[in-house]
Image (cartoon, rainbow over all chains, first blue to last red; front, side):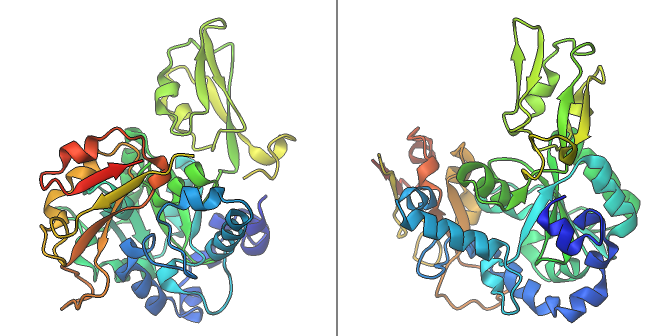
Length: 289
Length: 85
């Protein structure tokens, strides 16, 4: 179990705690104004100067001796901030975790607060200029996003029922996207995204710069050598470069230290050769999120 | 270490500074495989409606991930991008 489950999970996983989805929590934290400010300025978050430093050329800045380490620590503190005076335009306290599709559907069917909306993926719009209806937002955030015309899809239904939202997530999973659940800000949960590297803002910082904007799932994938036929379908589905085909063994190998536990390879496998195992029961991976 | 520099001529691109509207073009965003560019609202302009901004700009943000492939330079219809390293 990760630190955030300890703090906000009420004895379980943080994203399965119903309190984190409640309107009472949002009201107590005064989130309407916070989220409005955050999403109005969403695209500027990487260009805006924060403590005199913007994300432009972040890779070079992080590689500087000493200064790089100071910046890394400051950014990590910002991403995971729980302080009272968080700054919405810097997206303080906004981070997420990869989840397998069955948990995403569980959240959508049971926990997500109404109203549920679908909108254009902000990251894909910002970094690729592609309009793609894929993010599912709920609770306070959906009423905020409905005020922002650039994120609202045309010619499609915006408000969804629980079943429709679960079906939409399933559809994104079939396309090969990773489901992620987001604190926004911690501990309130109001979005499930279907992410893809390199366009996703969160996965970008995690994969390319090692900042913990997205945590690995509570699971990791393992391949059953007896069932694997070496069809390589799973290799094409992995966004994290954790799977490769071994010509000698005529089957695939999964690197558990690279695996994010999204379960896409398991969903793709035509031979049911891959299963997800709890991360915490593996002595090597325990606590490595 | 080679540091990449990408300069966008904002007199040709970005509708707050006299160029074209990047929302209609976005060719560089789509051409770039590692997604180096970010399209964002312009700073320090007065918007009629802050919920629906009309002034946009493109900034190359993830410079360390640039692969020097030159696709953005070729894709830009305004010839506004220069890459140096």
